[in-house]
Image 1: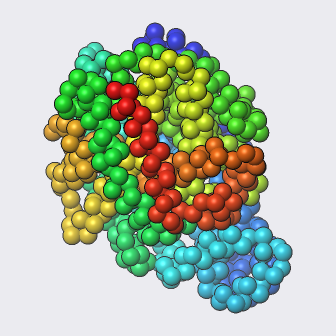
Image 2 (image 1 turned 120 degrees about the vertical axis):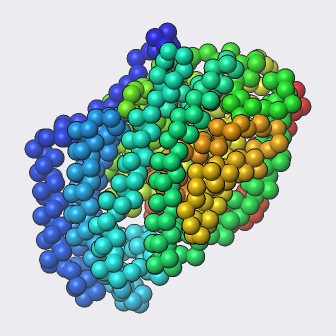
Image 3 (image 1 turned 135 degrees about the vertical axis):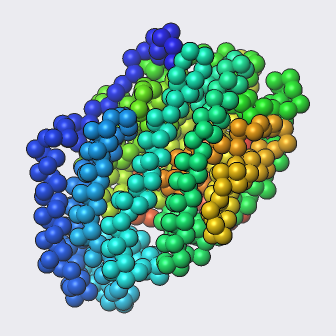
Length: 594
């Protein structure tokens, strides 16, 4: 990033993690670690093998103590992870993160008995115990724990899998993260990070987009054997565990953790795939014509339109845009959002060794979330700020549910974030009177929605094909590239032109490594929010309190219960059609104006 761009952005915030701990060597951190270790061991010694015999009152108290230890562990691991995310090339911080992760894993191993023994209690006996208020409070958590009953293994195997995870799957994830963070991409006389070079794919200059795209393909291609080994190993690891746990398909475990039925996810994926021709295929053919070509080079997919001034949006202006949009919908929502800017809860600048992309980390209910961004002043960066702030506000609202019940399933975790984006976009569009600027903004929104819906479903299809084929043996880098190109061709359409190096682009997607099949949650959330926003536009009053109540519920309610007050049902095919029709309608408008 040039000095001129940095100056235009203004001062970007860095987060302060001292609300968690003042440092890796502080006495409070070491004291909490010792306290969690002692309390976990004591609970194991006192209650292991006795859970089924406890009264409802005693069982509720035990779960309460278990929750308190989980809160401590969550604070410790959050601090270690967030410290690591801004300094992945610092060996001492990486070592601290690894050591603390190992310690937390060892401690939680002592607590494993509780969920295992809860799942061996008969339904009728547990229902009798839940008549006591102390245990009834945890009914949503018990529901989610017991959903895994058909897939639970013996205590010994569960403990072994738990303890080996830190040297298994987690170690491969760390290898991926540090490998990507260490990569440098040459452009002229500059060496760029992955976040910087990926940002250039939306640069107004075609020559810079082209050079960036080639560099990305070359660098990931030079390292493709490492990334292929990582994804092959993790896919095999997942296959082994899925087989032992009797999950029908590779995606089934994710669906269970998302508290959504296989059929609902299948309906979503099939609806989006069926809509490819009227969404992405049609839009990218239109964009190719906008750019004066029959075909759209893959590095031009996110190119700004010729009419786009693509100005740099300073950080202060972005903050005002987002908070004003939130406030017009809900002052309560905006007030919570304001806290992220009044306090050092956001890390915004691009920096060497920093994790690419963006996220909102909830930490623990007794603290507050933190947002990580790589803000570079583009309109998309403003939308990313609106998105991650939505996550953060959602996490604040859900925190009173406690450490065990505040987390929202991924399918609903994207609701507040995508809704925040929608609010910001609609406000920007409504304030723009110039037809040309409105068209550019509308095209940008369509591209964001295609990236959220079409592209994420295509990612899900890539994962499905990879995991299915992995069952017959290791996939070569060439085969992984073939699958990637096939999926991208199907989803983006005949207007896109791909070159050979694009076959390596799957390797920069972290979700494939960190959270297999996470990606469909974005499409779920976008279509859900489209339907939800339509209800909001039609509602005279009463929408805001119902919306805030949905966010406050955290993980206590399933998607059917949360959507029922709005008259929506994700199990019905017309639900997905309603969301996709909004995207198609935007493309209709753009075609009419072309």
